[in-house]
Structure formats: C-alpha cells, structure tokens
Image (tube, rainbow over all chains, first blue to last red; front, side, top):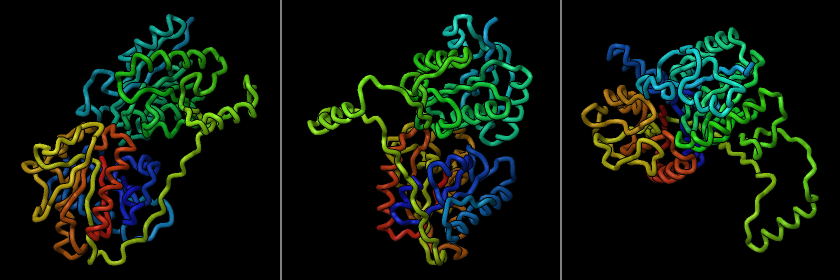
Length: 77
Length: 347
C-alpha cells in the first residue's frame, strides 16, 4: 500500500516493527516502531511516558517526510 | 539407525495458544509436537523428529538475535541430520521466523535445512538462500504440505539430488541447471507461438521478473502548511466495525472521518485485525493510529492539518493484489484532497 501511495506522488513514511519486511515491500522512508501489537506505544510505561514515546516516534516520521532520500532509508529513533 | 531431525514450530502449532501467547521465548521439547507427527508418519521410520523447538512468533520478530542464539545453541548440541521448520502457510511472522532460523542453521552450523510456506509469505523472500516448499495459504493445506516437505527432506537426508522446483514442489530459487529436453527449443518456441496466436493457453518457460520499486517522492518542504493523512494496515476501525472489515484477508478498506476527534479511545474505536494480540490496540487505539500525537502537532503548528479522513484495512493474510487495489484507489482520494504526506502504520 505504501508503494501505491508513493506511486500516486505523495511522500509516505512507513512506521512498522519488522523493518526487513518493509524493505522488501519497497517502502522508501521507514521508521522502526516498538512492537507488533503496539507499534506506537508501550503498555509497560506510565501513560505520560508512553505518550512521550509515541510523540518521539511520530516526530521522527515527520522528519523522514521532510528529508530527501535517494534510496530506501530507515530512520532509527 | 534412522535420520534425526529437529523441528521448529510456533506457539500456535504447539498448541500453547494463539496471538496472546506469541511472545513466548524458545522452548526445547523432546520428540515430535504438532505437525511433527505428520512428518514421522511420512518417513515411516527412516527418519524421525527427535526434538522440537517451540518459539512465539512475536518473540522471534522482536528478539531475533536472542532467539537465533538460543536455537543455534540447542541445534548445535543435538547435531541432527536435518533441521525443518513450519510449514508456516501465510502466517507472516511465522514464515519470516522459519526462513531466517533455517538460514542461520544452514550458514552457521552447516546442517541441511528445509521449510515450507505460501509464496506470498514475507519469509519467502529468502527462497534463493533457503529451500522452501510451496504450500497453500492456510493450514487447511497441511495434508498436502506435510508429505511434500517430508519427501524433499528425505532426499536431502539421503544426499539425493533434488529435481527442478516444479518437480519437487519448492519455490523457484533462481538456480539453473542444464538438462536435455525431450523436444528441441525451436519446436517448443514455434508450438508456444502458435498457441499464443490462436488464443490457446500456453505456459511460459521463463516468467518475466517484475522490477517493482517506486522512486521516493520529494520531501515535504513545509510541514507547517501540509495536510498529513494517517493510514494503517493495523485494522483500526470505529467501535463495532460498522463496515465489517474482515479480521483476515480483507476484502475492502474503510474510510473514516476524524474531524473533531482529539484522540482515539477504547469506547470509540477498536481493531479488527486478527493477526496480532488486540488487547493493547483496543485499550488505546492511538498505539496503532497515533491521532492524539498528530492533533498535538496540529495545535503546535508543526503540521498544517491532520487530514479529516483516515484509511484503514487489515493486513493479516490480505492478498498483495487486494491491498495494492485498495491503496491505489484511496491514494487518488488523498490526492484530490490535497494531502501532502502520509504516515502509514503497520503491526
């Protein structure tokens, strides 16, 4: 789906946990996330900490969207 | 003296549980467990599963290095004649684990390996590195998959030469071996051309590879003026799943309005996805679709606007062709709505 959005001309960032799969699929901007059942969260953390974590991950995704890339790039947090 | 085999399976096939047990670390059991019985039956005493290693699919995905280290330690100590994993059918994390653990055993211990899965399984990307038997896309295909794997495994153990992929039922692995065909090439080419010209069916001898990569689009110049849209394959839907998006093999996607929604809540949203433990996403759907954070960025002016609509489907076992179709369609809607960028989340 990420490729189809890219094909339509819209820059897209894929936030996912198993990044090798995203690489194979062909996403160009990838942000690795926390875990499969909660990519943008961590239930072991207190609510405020979890929110801060989510904010950090999404901020990285926004950075990825504003960064020029030539090739598939993983934006580690 | 029969051949000794170590078998790798996941928590589901070991009957430990489903998604809620996908986090279990590797466990070593003596003898066969689950599908191992079918292998033993096919081998009729010439080989047997002496040990089974059970590992949770999410554990392998999230702790790959540790999982591999533990499994390699056990296999190294047991010194089997063959290491077999799965079959994983269309289970993505399971297939990924099977293919990767087989590659590790093969490359680091020099033990012959074999696994089995559906050709669209992400693990099948390793088909040129590891021998993978082709299976159907669901466990209903076990009756055919187990004997197919057992037969090829026996060839490997006996040291017999394996046939072409179409003969021995494995995913084409890019290896070419010369052989003499019954009919000469010129005749086969003319026969194929005649069939093609008369509209009759024909089978190509060499499928054209599809080079599907899409060049990255230019970065967004000014996010503070941009409309950013959220999309997901994690199956987040309004509570009650009003459009009945399937928990597996989705037949459609959903388009939902979040105008005025500051954050997703347990009361208003849920996940329809059947391929991961839904507890955390149901408690707080922002963990899969981060509406709360994007609203804050919107208020702060970091982004111009969070698009009013989000697009969702369930990635679990959904055919590649289907998901391609959904996204091609909603990408056009996003374009028409002047969306500047998309964040796609996956589980």
